[in-house]
Structure formats: C-alpha cells, structure tokens
Image (cartoon, rainbow over all chains, first blue to last red; front, top):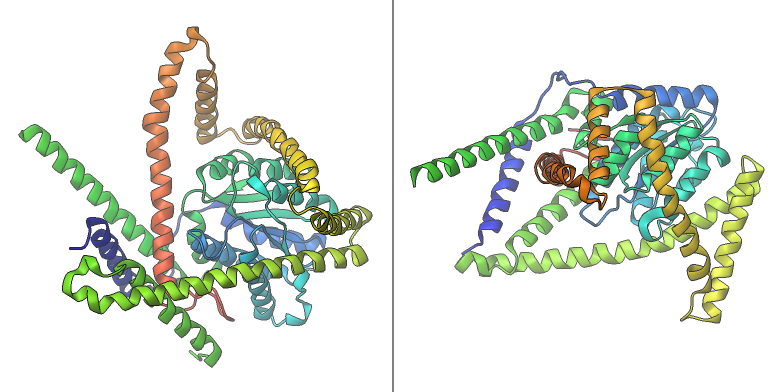
Length: 250
Length: 220
C-alpha cells in the first residue's frame, strides 16, 4: 500500500490541480494594499527621471532546487519592475548569485525590452552574476558597491537572502536609496522587515503578478492560494476539535 | 487570442515534462501501489532521466556564469560609469587571472581563497552585527508602528534573556515561552504560507496557466 505521506501529497496536488483549473476570474479582484507593490512603479519612474539604473537582485534563488518557484516569481516581479524602466537612459541591472538563474535573468530583461518594442536597447551585460561565496557574503559585498559604482537609484531585492541582507540594506540606507526586500527564509524576512523601506512578508511575493500586471486573470493564483489557506485552516480547526473531543471523551 | 507557435511549443514542453516528472516522483518505484505499480514504475525512470538532464544543464550554467562575469567586467573596465567602477572591475579581472595562475601552481593549497577571500568574508560577517544594530535603530527612527514596536520589544527581551546571568532567570523563562509559543507559531504560519504559495505556483506552471517564459508573462 502507498504510504500516508504519498497519499496526502497526491491528494493535495490533485486538489490544487482541480482548484487551479476551476478558478478562472475575468473581473478584477479587490486586493489589500501592499506598500512594496504600490511604490514599485514609482521606483521605475524615479530611475527614468534621474537617469540612474534600477537594481533588481534575485539573490540565491536558483532553478533546479526547492527554490525554483521562488526564482520564477522573483523573475516575474522583476519583469514588471523592469518593464517601465526600459525607456530609461540607464538600463536596469539584474543580479543573481546563482549561475542557474542567469538565463532566467537574461530572459526576463529581454522580454521586458521586447514587450516595449525596444529589443535593440537591450544589453546582455545588464544581467550580472556575482558569485555568492560561502554564506553569500561576497554577493552582499558586491551589492554594496552598486550605489557608488553604477549610481543605482533603488534596490529591489526579491529572492533568497539570509542575514547578509543587513549589509546591503544598511549601505543603501546610508546613501538614501529606496529599498524593497523580501526573502523565503525567516531570517531574511526579519532583516527585511526591520531594515527595508518596504518589505514583502510570507507569500506576498507570490501574489506580485496580480498587483503589478493589473490584469484580472493574474489574480487567479492569489485566489487559489487563499482557497488552499482556508481549507488548511478548516482542517487544522477540525483536527484540533477532534483531538479535544478524544481527550475529553476518554 | 492569437497564439504564436513558439509560445505554444514552450507551453507544451513545460506541461509534458512537468507532468511526467511530477508523476514519476510521486509514484516512486511503484511498489507502494501494488499490482498497478508495475505499470507505473517506468514513470520513475523517465523522471530520473529528466532530472539528470537538468543537473547536467545546471552544471553547464557555471560556464555561462564565468563568461558573464568576465564580459560584464571587461565592458565596465572599458566603458565604466566612473573611476571606482573601473578600478573594481580591474581588481576583479586581475584577481581572476591570479586565481587561475595560483591554482595551476598548486592545486592542493588555494592561497588566494584561504588568505584573502575567507578573511574578507569574515570581516564582512563581523560587520553584519553593526548593520543589524543600525537596522534596529532605524526601525524606530523612521516609522513608529505597533508592528515595529512589538518587533523591537520582542527582540530586546530575547537578547536580554540570552544573557547568562542568574538574576535574569524570570526573563529567561519569558524568553523560552516567547520562542516556544508565539514565535514558533508565527514562523510556522509564514512557512506554511510560503509552502502553499510554492505548491500553487508550481502546479499552475506545470499545467501551463502561469507562463513566466516566452514573450508573454502569466497569460491564460
């Protein structure tokens, strides 16, 4: 017989499949305000007006690991951040510390320029790999040089970061740069919450497309996540009630 | 909606490879499914082949990385926005060449890595402490919110409670409770949220509903 874990996993995936196929909204969905997504278009405008590049860091998010989805949604957020900034004299810079994410970063930049009909303005060197080194400190060290060397206008740090995020955010704060930060790790999120101007917490990064894309169908993912969340809450409450009933019954 | 052939091809490849790999990983060797398992077992072999392919491709991206690193810094050295940028790129390129030479000279003892990079990274690690203190100070200076206050008070209680002083025993009990109950619950909540979002995104990518590739983004 299949193990309990196998059965539960298959059931969850089947449920998610069904929910993803059924939920198809055609009208915009009211969503709560998230300051990072409110301010992101302004950062692109700031970059254009100041002729200074916008920096988007994908951190340690990599393809081919448990962080694959994080890398994809980080690239998705990067796409919407870069798209308006492509008309700037200073092209946006995308950095990553994982080599597997370089093709993703290059494709994100290329798509953003192509969507504006400006593929000729695209430069391959705008996607950069900074090796992470042990504990990702080399990557953070490299990011602290960007404000002085490339005169970036702001940092959008979406991806996998740990406590080393503090170095980048402290350096950005000293130079008065606006920062948006998030991470899939709890340490990175705590640092982002304390030090970034706008932090994305928990699964907020995964809902970015609906906020930034402004198209009704993009909110389907958010609706599915919310539905699963409620199902999980109901299951937890039911299991808790069952356990309590067992305790008081015996 | 007009659908381009290339885009449809990308989607078809993602859907077919995604579903086969997922099915293979879930089924395993098929033994858990009794008699039906014999029919399902080949799926596991197929998914293993796909994963091996991915591992090889990812290993090759290291070459792309080195090429990217060199091209970015050669361009910056020639057309850099300022002297500082050019100097940093020059240092990186010279270090790259020196590392290659040093590795050729002695493959066992990595002089530059052990005497330069590790030391610099240790110094950066020490600086993180100051950056965090600066962050805590900035949290209150910029915006005094209820969330910020709770964050700061919690952090202070845990930091003080971690001090090895017998007089602080009552506070250490509070710290233990904070770590075991509210912090653990909050952390689990955040991690569950991320796990659910990852699962939903993965499934939607596999069935072709979220497309973060090709010339369109997240099109249905």
